[in-house]
Image 1 (cartoon, helix red, strand yellow):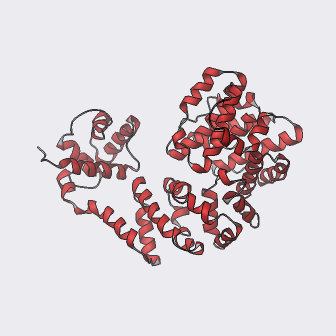
Image 2 (image 1 turned 45 degrees about the vertical axis):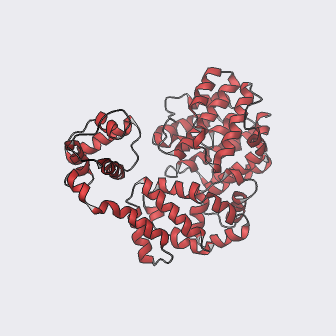
Image 3 (image 1 turned 90 degrees about the horizontal axis):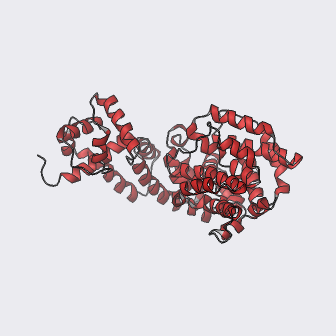
Amino acid sequence: MRVKGTAVHLDALKHEVQRRFGRPIRTKTDCQNLEDALFAHTGKLVSYNTLRRFFGLIPGGEPRESVLDILCEYCGYLNHEAFRSDARRFKFYFDWTQTIDKDQWTEAERDALLDRIAEEDFNAQTIFLWVLYKLTSSVPIRDWSFWLEHPMWTEGDLRKAQLVFFSNSLADEFRMRLNSPEPLKELQENPMSFRWVTHFFADYETIQTGYMAHVLDVMATRIEVPLYYHGMRIMQHFMGGTWEHILPHAHKSVEAGYDPDAYPILISRYFQARFWVYYLEHGGWDPRLTSDYLRELQRINPEYHHLLGMEFLPIASIMGFTSPVLEILESQLSQIHYRGNWSAAVDSDLIRLAAMLAHARTGARSLFEVHRNSLLMGFWYKAYRKYLQGLYYASTLLIGEPDAEYEAPYRHFPGLARALQN
């Protein structure tokens, strides 16, 4: 029988298991996947329902000691007793208290820290990125490269951490300190830092005036990724309603060409550019877009479908190309239900808003409501929030709800109103 107070150790074990697993345990599916991972690592079986009880997802008592032994073995310990007596469990927290208080870093110390964080779980990486925020926000912009120009960011597998860092932790810092061309030019002196900051922190809220608008002006002096630069220029002029400036950037994007190895957002910008070239030159929809897009859905991993459509489908939908958008979205190839993290939820909601706009135009109220009820508005972080809210308001106008919320975000992007009048 375990002694009073072991709940603390169980909480610590839950943390260690999730750290070893690589992500939080929050759903039945997570527990089923963990069951497989435990068996693959230890050769011993713990049912997913036992795991659900252990993580508090369903009611139940504390697990048997034999179950705790298997969980501890999975985490690298001999058994549960060894886990309880091992002081290494507390080193993680000690490290961060030392990091927060440390003012000067050598390259060796930095490299050791970044090597360590690459092996940590999402929660630990989030804590580290908050520390990194404090470190970078207190130094001149030219010194950001000490932390940002490191192979970890390009050679590692820290997608979740990168998103938290660039889209959340430093968002307001970027908006404030990079709100004019001069500091951006200073950052551009370190090309790797400039590219990481500006590519991972694409901010739609300031794409007309402010941080992102200045980013694009400075980026124009040295365009390293044409599909990124010209794709963002297209978004800028679409949102601003200055469509007469879109065509040169659309042509440049098409000239850059389709690259199957590109990140799916860049492929989305390629399709978006093709849409604008045909629309602005011929006034309609290129039927080859539909077949090419469906072929691309079939080629790439479904986990990236939301990235493939996030900048292409909402625009095509609000511009009134309902039939091809619905043909794409209703295809069995199109899968947008993957929401591996909060950023993926935002991207998926952009696709759902494309569906809402299309169903609103056809008057399909029940289908409109299905997608509206699936939105996760609480995940709409600041860089994209106004744009999502503006699209939402446009869809409610089309469905016949003129008094719906988010009129101010809708007015923030004149291109949305122009698209509805198109």
